View 1 (cartoon, one colour):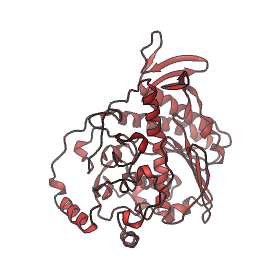
View 2 (tube, helix red, strand yellow):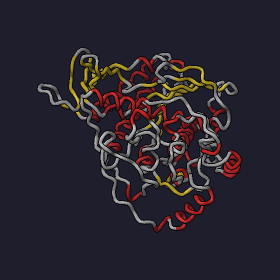
View 3 (tube, rainbow, N blue to C red):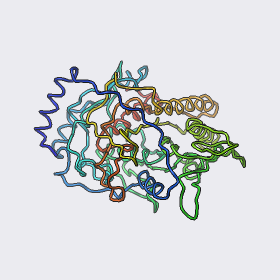
View 4 (cartoon, rainbow, N blue to C red):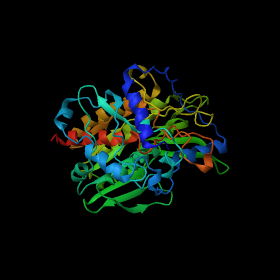
Amino acid sequence: MMKSTTTSTLFSERLKHYDKREKWSKMGKIVPFLFTSFALITVLFSFFLLFSPIPFKVTSKQGLTSVQNLHELQGNFPKTDHFEEVENCDLFTGHWIPELKGSVYTNSSCTTIPDSKNCFKHGRQDVDFVNWRWKPENCELPMFDSMAFMEMVRGKKMAFIGDSVARNHIESLLCLLSQEEIPLEIYKDTEDRFKKWYFPNHDFTLMILWTKFLIVGEERMVNGTGTSAFDLQLDKVENSWADFLPELDYAIISDGHWFFRVMYLHQGNSLTGCVYCNEPNITKHDISFAVRMAFRTAFDHINACKNCNGLVTLVRTFAPAHFENGFWNTGGYCNRTSPLSKEELDLGVFEWEMRNIQVEEMERAREIGKKQGKKFGVVDVTRAMLMRPDGHPGSHWGNKWMKGYNDCVHWCMPGPVDHWSHFLMAVMRKELGIFS
């Protein structure tokens, strides 16, 4: 890593010329991933999405800053105030501006960063990607306040429901909350998909409920080998997460990356269509249809839940990948070091369509849920994250099983993924009507 004085000087120069910097050329549109039926691709992609190593404790010399410097930064970090501005402001339309204070934690001060997200440990040298802050057009996004958040959720249970990107979010939240209280890990399944943490000082339970599609999805097997083709039951949710709903106060739902593959769509006992298949006499659908049906079924199940009293459901919108010059398995990479500008943002990409579907289904569920006393909301990260091709591990994720492949799906920690919790807290306060 570069010395902090050198980093500060370099970034100060970037800040001075911020408004004059040359624009990048448009990023190529990310094309849906098409996966073959070869067993090797199946195994590799499974490792890519499911990989979740045991948290790695990092020595202080590997951090961005020392713990002493961290305390100095926290003393000057923007406080969580002016929530009254949030009530009538669009938090999710804005741009990234330089923020020299950086992150409130480092890979030294947070010891629970998974090895695969610890980009500095694995040799990332540039540090500018942590020195940006999201600025809504007409207000300020209050920064995450771990103490205030813990008071909001005192005595509550919260679950993040989704795939490995949902797990990335909860890992980031744990680092932010660790500045206030270190949790106890009270459960982990053998596949590291379902984990539960408890904060005894605040009687707060946090968990990750892992699911590929939200709905039931089974991989087709040939001679005991996975084919990367799935049978999806469009009208049935997966019990691995749904069974926990009655005990939750907050459910943060997200999904999307597993839908980029061959899927056979079923309703009841009937095969009603497919995605990415070339078989005769089967109705062809695109990914949008499968995503819409999955979220609709999930939200309908929540609204029909008779024992889910007081449940607040928030959908975290699709977080885009940023592969350039190829896909994950064809040499694609993500080696940018700064955000895109507003002028470079392309809302014609498929990721934005995915986001729109999720928001539309949330709005539909919210209207239905009013009759049952259910609450729905959105943590809309898509626009902000479309502008952050610099925030992924890329080659800096240390996966010995997939050496040579780049991770442009998940997010470095610390990094822009930490802003998801800034959004989350603001939305929670808005949903609860707390603005002071």
